[in-house]
Length: 277
Image (cartoon, rainbow, N blue to C red; front, side, top):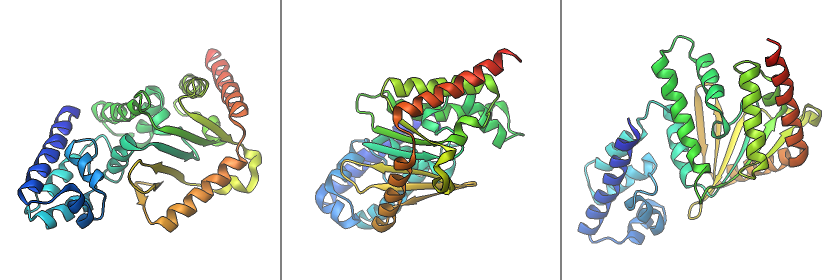
């Protein structure tokens, strides 16, 4: 689905929600209470600022007795082939997050990937895919990064395992460019980057990608990913444990300045390697 048509569906969802809610004589606060979110949350749906989760859309249908229209619209919004089904909701949450903390055990996070790196990763995972499919995935990944250009961009804190600096994704030239990009974003203070070195010992055994997202008017959420699957966690006790794990990773990681120096050193190593091939 093209970005324009997605936005049109999103805006229709909001306008229709407002009309149906007002016809039912229910305020935003009242509807929010009945579907277990805040009134401000409902207001964001109606203004097309935030796309609701599927379960919320289903509850709205039940409360307003709208014969599944909001569930169908929500499914249409989720149906974007540039993102895996299990990841589409994460993309929407990133757009409204005020703070994102991520641990990357093997690959540069999608929000920091260059086109060349994203293309190499996508091709490696889809060796028989068409060029159109590959470019579709790459464009989706680059589109996600627009949130870092906004004036209201989230605070973005990333811990990279040293693996990320050493695994030659796409070859030396691609890696040199990618690591240079991460270092530049760090210097510009667009993102705070730390590296978890091999010397961190047992902390390095904490494998698995982890993303923590905080919002202005909603509880924090954690997201973990495995092979061809991802899980959003919103149980407060589980999210609290995820934050505690992330705090341990940050404590064991190198300081931001030392991390940037290591990233720049790795980029230079790849740059020299690329110049001799």
